Image (tube, rainbow, N blue to C red; front, side, top):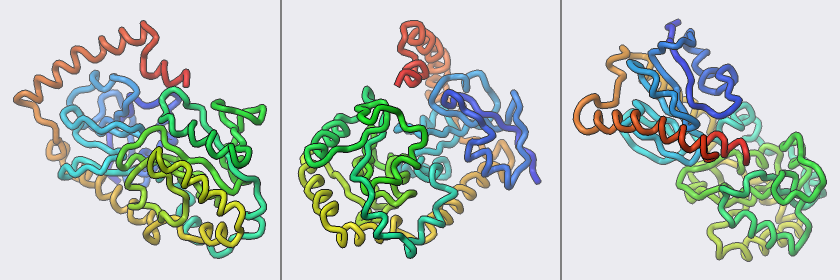
Length: 323
């Protein structure tokens, strides 16, 4: 088994590489050695420590709605539908949340339809209000005109406590409001997959290309801000007609069978292309010309800018901790 000298930097607060999906995935095929002078450096968007590392291949990963800067990183893994030779893989966050449950979710033959129809109406579990698209709050109040929505997060909480286990909470509801914090092609997070994992119908707003992965007949989609009243009418109809509700609930979640296998093959091929060849052959960033100057300027100015913002109370990690 080939040994890889790797490290992880600039990931979110509380990050533990041992539980990170890429570390666990690679562990099945390589002997992984965490070291301070790695050959391969996995980076994210929560800092700038990657500038301290030279002579290594940098692989950017993000679960946020950010595109990789391929002038800085050799490779990128993210949400966007990007074509850039062998340098990018689309691997959205919803896959990480549901990876161990995808096979089970393919089979919807043994649903307890009677029990699922008799659940509470709808839930809303969010903490982020400052950085989110305002349509999330607008829709909450619009649908609340029909029936009370149980809000179990810190934002608009109306149940008297914050739910400690989101999946356990939302499984008792017929519908779950699943609105992304922003609209970006390919940006699909845990918002839609968590309700699906417990057979609660998502009310989704976000990725305009959501139909590339998910069967749009299996959930309610809000297309734009003018569509709120139509979505509410659809929900009311489903709530009041068990046969229509069951019909939607029995729809397959995904557009293809064994969707996990397809993404698993893509991920392995992407990583094998990086680690399966000589290190120098895997380098993709350019070391000469204007791009070299660009990287040099970014390295010189970005850490100073981050220090300044943190001192002023606007640091990225500091802001995220407050959300």
